[in-house]
Length: 276
Image (tube, rainbow, N blue to C red; front, top):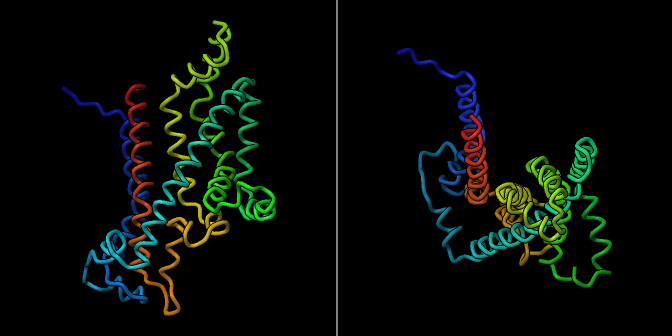
């Protein structure tokens, strides 16, 4: 019996392996440097043959002020990213249903117009925010302020990605709902019920995008409200940069993103298996 290989499947598996290697290069480098002894000389740290988990132990379990602040900043990152992503995904769901009501050409045009807003420097958003925070009472709280502007920064991308993931399915359901004569409440429930997986993927994608934002938490926050992305800069002193601690903190920050990538890849792989 002659075994015949599917060249499409082989090329797909090869591409997945290449993408996995590329994705893990930076995390593995950070993990490697984080296992080296602390110090401001990066060359000597990398060249050292010594490995130690001290940097990770200090960050995650240490009692020093810097370690405690960093752990608190991780909690800030989780809370800010989760809240901003939840509302951005909800807004994207509503906007996606509205946009899908147009014909395909118009809908694609609208989503790409929104996507171009992401290309604008976030400095514009920060400057505008700094102008209005004194006139809006609920923005006086640093945490609410950070979440609000993170939400604003990610809305265009979330809407575009949501339409990219589920726009065609929503359009088909809108046609069926129109024929059935269902009311708006029932229509939204039926749409959500049929695109739950796509909604989850959009939430995870938005979470990852918000997670790495540096400028907004830095501009609108302070030491107590900084995210871990901002707090990593505290490992720099007048003596220099503690590269091992920075690498250990950076790797710790990348773990949630790696998990999100794995979940999305598994979802895509399952879809591919069902279609093939």
